[in-house]
Amino acid sequence: MKKKYYFLIYLILSIVAILVIYLSTWTQVEKNLIVINIIIYIIRKPLSSITAFIFKKRSYRMIVSISINLIWIVFLFWFLIEFDSTLFFAIVPFLVVAVSLNFKNIINNMVSGALLLSSDQFEIGDLIETNEIQGIVKEINLNYTKIREFDGVEVIIPNSNVYGSTTVKFTHYKFKIYEPLTREEFRKKRHYKEYIKLINKTLSAKIKTTIYVKKLELLGSLNPNFLDEMLMNVFKVYEPIFGIMPDYAIDTTRFERVRINLYVKSGNPTIILNYLDSFLRDILFTLYPNRIYRDWEEYQKSLPETTFKSEGDEK
Image (cartoon, helix red, strand yellow):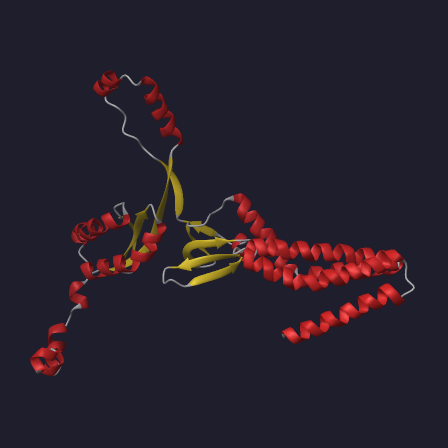
């Protein structure tokens, strides 16, 4: 709505408030309630603007907006009770039904969001799959869950869909293993108390790790004797990037094809998100170089010679 219309509405409401105070024959309580309702309605938008300026997080702004609306509803119902209690009890059931129907999806999302936040099914930064969408969780609030996919696209899913669907969580915690002291070190240092603390730390320390599983179908013409060697060459290149060496396992063999499961591991799921495409590309180039570069030399010969000349050669 344009600002001039807001100004017109506020002017009309101000005139109504003045008429109610000085000309109406209602009781003083009814007059006060009418004026309070008008004041709350007028200050709703300015307060929302001030809240948006102060608080950057949307959840805080939502809490302030809901609080203002609830206060307004209380005074509105109070006025209806003072004005005519019979009218109040006749209107309230219809209002409850109307609000329930209109805000059913919002209520479901808020309830589902509260359950997601309290159940710790997943948290921000986890790599998950839900509603056939894979990606890293970027935001969880009472209305929706935001997920960034592997191609960088951010998807917003209503919480009711997330909570009611199957969720695969690739990020989990594992216990950190500490190297125990040797007998000579133990006798030399004689730090008995520190060693006990180390044992307690071993039992409680956990590391957050992401293991992403990618299924690949390989052509039957690939020699299985060289599969491990070729994959390990790629795995060793990406081990410094991911922090943990990837792994694989043979899943099934059918229709002259071999299916393998790639296990891409990292302590930071964002690294998997950024380097998965190049990792799969290098695996493809390593396993099928002849198929990818087949007839490439003949294709180069078929092109005009000027295509491969540089600007310096032309000069």
